[in-house]
Length: 116
Length: 113
Image (cartoon, rainbow over all chains, first blue to last red):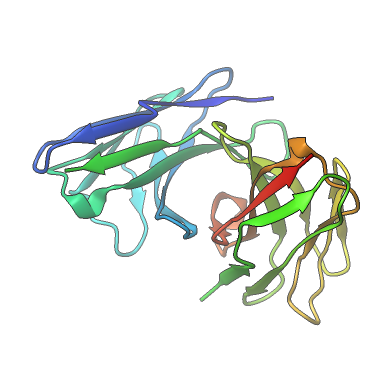
């Protein structure tokens, strides 16, 4: 089946720095990718929809200047957490819609961010 | 708004035991319902789905029936294996179509030999 990778799998950074997380579709092209955030013992919350060649669409309550999304190619989307603070510590997961007719998304393994 | 509620885990079972993970939802209309599974170190994978009332989704011995009367989509398996140990997420299709999934909090299942 289709594979989506994320890099890094975990990252620790100092407060005030920026962190970039990559999401790649390894064997298919994805004009759309999705970014989710998951707090401990809570649901995955959709943050934004990443669109190749155009601006990302953010969900209500998500700061677009805080979470910069760039869909640089048909296989790569990046999420940059700018001026990170401890409250940004979380598990970030990306996904890409299926291309084989199944109504589903293919998910990356997630990136755990810890801001000190 | 739309929401999904799952039973809290962890659920700990012995091999070959019967599994039920409860899931209820709140939604306008009749959205498609999904169960995703996340094995350690891997991304979420679609386990099964149901697109309309009374549909039964099934895969790998797991089943779930779309019950609109009780707004539920409980996951069941008759005989679990150690390899079923994972986190299970119930989800519904939000108003944005399958691109927009609303997830429950996830239920961790641990199966012991």
